[in-house]
Image 1 (cartoon, rainbow, N blue to C red):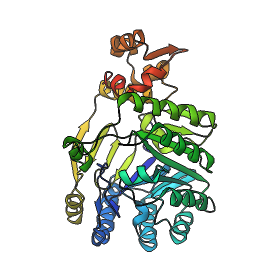
Image 2: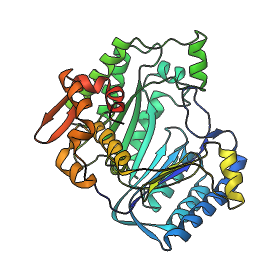
Image 3: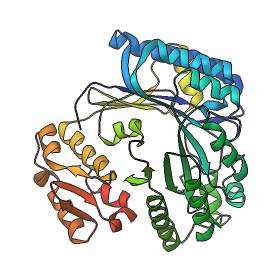
Image 4: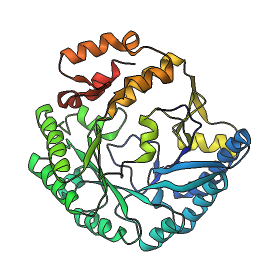
Length: 380
């Protein structure tokens, strides 16, 4: 945890071939005619930030997410990176990540990524089971995902996979098989997420109308425990609630978030954290476009955090890490006593077996991991 100036940047690319029914991210599908307008609006937003900082900013991490950034054409991808590089300069060993889907990631796009220094690829595989992929409305097959992972190695060595469990109809055996396939592939990092039915998504509406049935809690719990067991047995370190990595291949950009450090962010729905202020852009792609086309800010929410609010968020974020919260560093950073700020919540959850306190670190137990969001929210 530090109070250093921002050295990380997130760029949101809100375009997809298809809008999957479970996804509630800020994006549009089949509206590629908006891409030129997006690039111009992004340029305007980047230039507005440049006028504030006054110079090119050296950054240790760049994360281009979405949406599906690689949905852009190779030429448009080049333009996107040119815009980013006009305002942000990667340091020598910077981590530059791009999200992609297994389908549509051709050699020409991989060439563009490599040319622009991308050294980490995050693939939205979700499953290697075609039945599960169909339920999730994904546009690739398990075989395509395997082929893409193997092919990417010639361009980018550091590949991460996103996997989803708790999908309606998914069995424990199917999930274990997906984990087996994932660990057999040349990947450095795996993220596992339990499916959630977010409000205003097609999946939420279908579940409300009885067209989709949520996975029983006990089965979802077992799937998560199976992920921990199989992935750690395969040599990946469980370093955050949902994330596993080979040694030294943790996602450095996401570590910025979990360490409660500051970061730049651009694009619809993106949230930055600079000088203790969190600014969140409008989620609507069209509203964001219209605002920046007129050189007007698209910030929808601005929150100037007090020192206590920053401290509480730092606790919440640190507890997502398996290492947990280092109390002496926390107290030095914020000038607050952990015991006075959060002692009651900590004591309750320790007594219940969800938190542990060892060698100045407070961290989630295995039981705590299973209800991490509930535990963590009590510290806000």
